[in-house]
Structure formats: C-alpha cells, structure tokens
Length: 523
Ligand code: ADP
Ligand code: MG
Image (cartoon, rainbow, N blue to C red; front, side):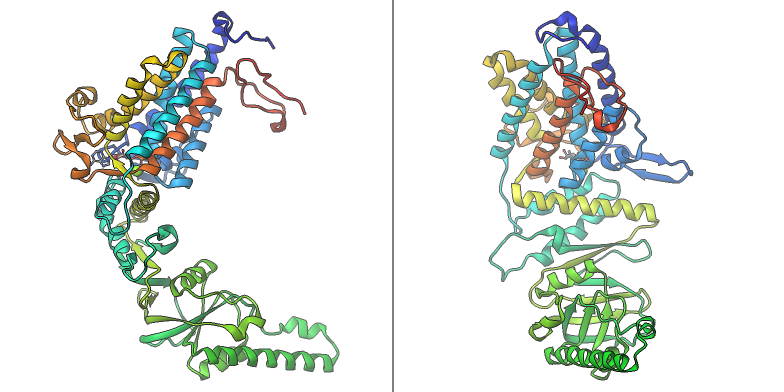
C-alpha cells in the first residue's frame, strides 16, 4: 500500500479509476429513478425472476427491488431505504441530489485535480448552510391550516393514482382535528390505522375497524354506547396435558379449584366495569370464563397486539397486563359497535374524543391497491413532517432559491467555494428534473423565473411561473432537509473512497479508504 501525500495530484491518478467506477455506479442507480421525480414522472414496470409484474413510480420501491451488485450502488440503496423508513417520502429527491453532487464532485477531483478532502469539506459547509436556509424558509402550520391538505396532495399526488387517495387522507385529518383538545400536536402515524384490501371499498371511518370473521360467536348487529376493556393477560384454562402429568388426585382438584376461583375473580371484575366487550390478545380463553361472560351478554374478542394498542389509543385507557390489576380496570366507551358479516369487518366508532381513524384502501388489483396504499402513506408522512417542521414551496422552488443564495454568499468563500458550488448545482437540479420529466426544457424554463424569493416556480400543468403556495404545490421542510442529509451521506462516502478491495472476512473489511488511511484494518 502506498502512502499518499494529500496534496499530490499525480499520485491520485490511479485512484481516479476507482472514483470513476463508483460514480458511474451511483449515476446508473440514480438514472433508473430520476425520471420518476414529480407528478409527471414516468412509471417503471418491475419484473421479478418468477415473471411477476409490478408497476410503480416510487423511487424507494424501485431501488429496493432492483438487483445491485456494486457495493457503492448498494450504499445508495441503503441510504434511500433509510430515508424511506425515517421520513417516509423524498427518496427520489435524495438520490437525484446525491447523483448531481457526485457528478460535480468527481469532476472537481478527477478533471480539475482538487483534493477530495477539500471538496468534501466545502460540500459539508454548503449542506449546513442549506439546512439553515430551509429552516428559515419553513412556514409553521397546524392541523387547522388549509395548506395541510396541499402538502398531502403534493406528496400523494406525485404518485400513480395518488390524486384518488388525497381525499381519504384529508378526510382522516378532518376527523382527528379535535376542537375540544387544546394541544394541537397529533401523532398522525399512530392515529391513522390503514387497512389495505383490494376486495373492500375505499373508506374513512371515525374509529377503528377490525378485519375478523367470527364463526363461533353471536355478534349483535349494532350496539350503542358500548363500554370496552382491554386485557393482555393469559386466560388459558389448565391444560389437559398438565392435568395428566399431575397424578395426585388431590393436587388436580386443588388446581381446578384455584383455577375456578381465579376465573370467577376475573369475570367478577370484568362485570363490575360494566363493559360490553372485552378485547384480549391471548388466543385461548378459559371455557368457564367464556360462559360466565356470555351469561352477562359480554363479548370476548381476540385481537392482535397492534389492534389492542390501537384500541387502547382510541379509548385512551390502559391495557391490563396483570391479574392483580384487574380490580383497577377502567373502561372506555365506543359510540357504537357493529359488525358487517359479509365483509368480515368489525366497526368500533369513536365517542367524543377522536383519537383514532381508519382508512380502508382498495384497488382494482392487489398491485394497484398497494400503490394506492403507498400514496396514502406518503400523504400521512408529509403531513406529519409538515406539522412538526413547517412547509416550503414545492416543485423545486425552494431548492432553486437556496441554490441562488449559496452562489451569492459563496463569492468570498475561498477554498471551500467549489464544494459549496457543488451543493448549489445539485439543489437547482430538482426543479430542472421535475420540469424535464414533465416534457419541458428544464434549464430554459427555469431561466423564465424572475421572482427568485423561494415561492415561485413553474406550474407543470400550465408551464407558467406561479407562486407555488398559491398553486397549492407545497412540501414539508423536514422531508427536504432529510433528503439533503441522506444525499450528503452518500456523497461524502463516495468521494472519499479511492479503492474497493475484497476482504477475507467481513470483520476485516472497510469499504474503502480515504486517500491517506489504511484500507484494511486487521483486528
Ligand atoms: P420523492 O420520492 O422525492 O418524494 P416524488 O416523485 O414524490 O419524489 O416528487 C416529489 C417532488 O415533486 C417534490 O419536489 C414536489 O414539490 C414535486 N411536485 C409535486 N407536485 C408538483 C406539481 N404539481 N408541480 C410541480 N412539482 C410538483
Ligand atoms: Mg414523494
């Protein structure tokens, strides 16, 4: 391994081959998704080894589905995945930003001969400043602002069939807007329960819907003002096998007696709460307990752990986890409870406080219902992020503004100026790409924008300059900031890698090396 002098351009010659190769890998991944950016982006048809077909225009889905072998391309996929999991949207934006920064950064390193460390430190400064500017430009909103619906329609509307589901998310938010509650903040991801089923019809329900077929239980059609309690306690009876193992007759009798006593205690404390329904997460329940409850017209319904938590959230009551706590149970009330036998759906309608809402998402086929589900999820993620971090003009307008600011401020930045320029270039590429995908000449159209205050961009439907807030094209600032941070992670890593070596074992591997670090570290 050769030691490198950081300033020695000649010595970098050999390493540039690795840089070229890595950049090409990133760009090829980016090229597969960049044409999907924005509402007029094109869809991709994915075909797997078994011939299953799948149409999507979701950057994250495409990237996670394609087979990448190149380690650096895998890094891009990983970062896109992280963006998707962390904020739920903005994946394509992150990849396009990364690709543009890498393209420019590579040009500076390979063609102009600037050392990677200098380029990377300039990029870091540019990113920091951009994040400050994003925050400055962010407009705070709350649940009651009309712009919340615009954020949802911008996020969901840039997907295939997205426009069809915008109203579902808006309707769900309308239900959650609780006029009685002073606290504005609602955790949307916890408060909106999604059911994705092509056989059903689209629906927003003011409460919780449970998909369940009740074969062995008589469920009345509709009940009103029903009290409910939630148990996460094992309600199993003494198992036959256990009884067989205990040979001593007295012992069996004693066990049975104590079981009967416990069962009676449990059913008595349930009765005391006045509950009409008991939700339990354990699969089995003691026969005696069931018949005690049935006598009193109390239904026992098995639900999953997730459903149990959602119900607890809706009713704002605790789940009882220990038999000893049975005496202190508090019940919550549903306005009504009804069962649709044909569809196998159990509806639990909210009373007064509206803490949970369910969206049922259908589709003509399983694939379209999944794509519509993703659009709903994007709408919710964008709304959540907008409520916490504010909104900015969409369509690449705020990115163009920040790009211009960076260029202006950059005039005297000395050695870092080139890295900052890389960030400025990448930010302006978002609008260019959205316009290009909509069939315009991106650069030409962008030159038409006179008001570069961060609100103005091109309405892709008319091709004219518009105030994006007025046109209803608004994004969440948080998603943009995260996309930029995700992109920066890939860029810094890729520009600093000058070699990829095959390691003997994963423990010894360090993906690459920065120009003056050792490549393989033996432990
Ligand atoms: P990502 O995976 O990054 O979320 P999308 O394909 O969802 O990519 O595109 C998001 C971008 O599309 C955002 O910059 C958003 O502002 C922009 N966009 C959405 N609707 C419009 C519109 N009507 N006109 C212009 N840009 C839009
Ligand atoms: Mg999106």
